[in-house]
Length: 241
Length: 135
Image 1: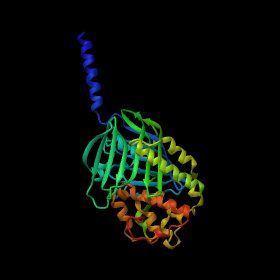
Image 2: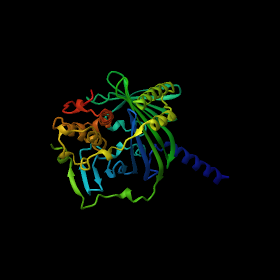
Image 3: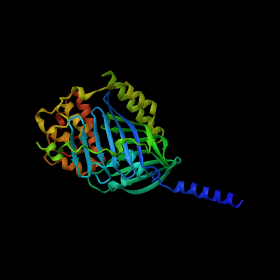
């Protein structure tokens, strides 16, 4: 009887602990997924396909397959290498322009799902309200040049909507997150849709679908290293005119 | 043109349904819009050396396709802006503003250049010295 109670107590504690572990806690070390991005505007659609490999240490290896193959390796510090296999060239950038946290899987994996990584860019929570059973959080920044306000709406603690609001109060981009699935101990949206309003009459739609999500698999690309004989092309050389 | 009008109507319908559904979008309508759009394979039209060898191109020869592709691959670095002609430090503005304000600026650049590809006209963005070229 005593043992049963103890086991039940332990089970309860474990269940409570599981609820307390933030999304993207240390439960999974590596996650990979196929990603298909389709961007439609003006009756045309362009497709980008890639496989993302995100590790708990913040490293991300993104293997772009279409329209051109290249491999982007980045970490949380913003050290980025873009390797082009066809020419054996590598572009190195340490300016923190691109970090692994620009990848949605990394954002969820690192426990930043609540603000979708906005905190990293200097946004702070301004208000929290309830609306038809949903929770709406408004993030703001005073940083000149940035989008001043971002609204995130949650359903069952998961973000389902993110709207970027310009200085005039107009929402210029709406992103919807849906079809959440468990990936290890976190929930991951397998579909995102962004609608950007470029003018009162025009808009663009970007649909991203995540599939073949694998947790802690042994894909060698997780440990990809740029070949030592790759020709380094600096961004300054690339940009010089 | 017919496809463009259908797409425009579909986008407006999607936007309306998104508002009505309180922060949810009609996935079926999105899928239908994408299905109705013509797939473009810009790389097939692209000069072989244009990506990533942007340094070999000059602003006067800026083509909509090349600009669009450079924005696709290296938009966060603002490479497409230098290809089309802009101030010499524009790349720094892109990189130092968190990948162009966490990707929003190159993202909208990408859309505007895609429209430029359709219209075969990007003259408004060539030699443009503003950070937000479409403002």
